[in-house]
Image (cartoon, rainbow, N blue to C red; front, side, top):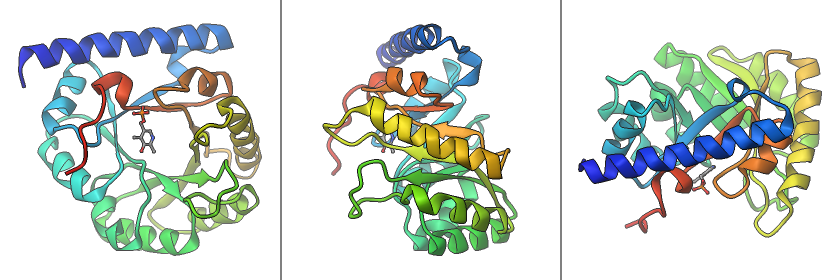
Length: 232
Ligand SMILES: *Cc1c(COP(=O)(O)O)cnc(C)c1O
């Protein structure tokens, strides 16, 4: 944890905060409406510590094998943990022990497994329903039409709370269009579940479009920590 790395992370955070402030200004929104989730996958726990020292409160990870030990190592820090990656049912027991939010809930089997795990761990896991924004069924995410039913099931499951929606803009597509679709789905969900206010959208490359479309959570990795090292 060299001082050079700390200075680098602080400078990156200042740049991201500037972009968020400009995007909020342009959209007539307040910065306090937005939660910055620092996505720290493939970076060491020491970077999470540096981010926390710089004032970051929310951490995102996408693989349980990596996230569980890092969350354990950072257990002394006042952080909120977001699981943002595709989730297999056999990882739910582990994820429910540290994740405050899961952004990738997209099917009934996962709701059952995560609910059982949260109940067993004596925790509450806030669930964002991942919405498929590119029509590609091979990837994760629920079809927009399936969101109301999934939300009802989450609300009926002990240990789980419906918290909102998450979306990833399709590669090579128009983020503004994808995020407009997500905003529509989010609006419909809020009418049925007023507490489900989270709209998780926007990454390093498209946070401006996401803020414009009403994102409440942006998930930022590269712009904060640099290019990810290759997975070994
Ligand atoms: C890695 C990841 C991010 C962060 O992406 P960057 O482009 O590095 O900001 C956001 N969301 C999810 C689901 C991710 O897996």
